[in-house]
Amino acid sequence: MVEVGRTHMLIEDLLRLEENSIVELDSMVGQPLNIRANEKLVARGEIVVINEKFAVRITDIISPDDRFAAL
Image (cartoon, rainbow, N blue to C red; front, side, top):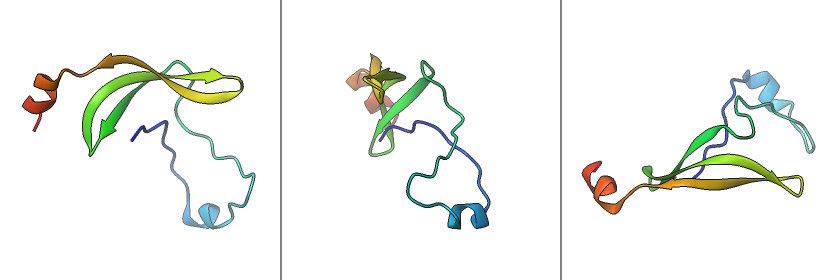
């Protein structure tokens, strides 16, 4: 799971969303993010844009020992 950003939205605004609606997030390109598997941190990365699409560049992989210690 990669969380790209967050936002707060009123329920009434959420219910008005339709195809092609745009929801602004609090993250920007180049900003660091955490990459999780089963809710456990496994790597860190940053948001990048490639051919007009968002992607994640892995910048750090958490060692197996550190992942185990976090359990």
